[in-house]
Image (cartoon, rainbow, N blue to C red; front, side):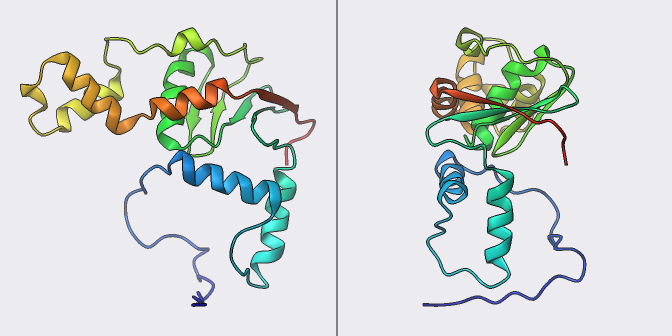
Length: 184
């Protein structure tokens, strides 16, 4: 078995390149969730990694197999732990954005501003024919984008930046609601 040894970074583990990474897929984030649920990483962990994995698993002790988790924080904000991947969460966040004081997403979750989250209505996730500001920005950067009619342009952009299948899977999974009494 090949092993890789990495020295501890003197600058706190920051990446040494500019820019951000691509969004993780649903398959990768679901695999991450499985490691959090079971502790089985599929590889040999170092002495440093073992307690880090256990501490991370403790922080996610509210996760349930086959369900997403809506974690409601003491300040009234919430985090929807979908483990759906970045492209699916981008689409989910896009549809939820106007319902909360603020929202942001990553590969694993969608953070929602203050207020008690309403039940999420799947009907709101029907695609529209109107472009949002992210889609407009991508259309201006798409090579030959100005040559395409609106419908194929939207289809091309949305297939690149959103994951409709992952979104649908996250919406159809049952949700567990977890209330956090005091945030760390």
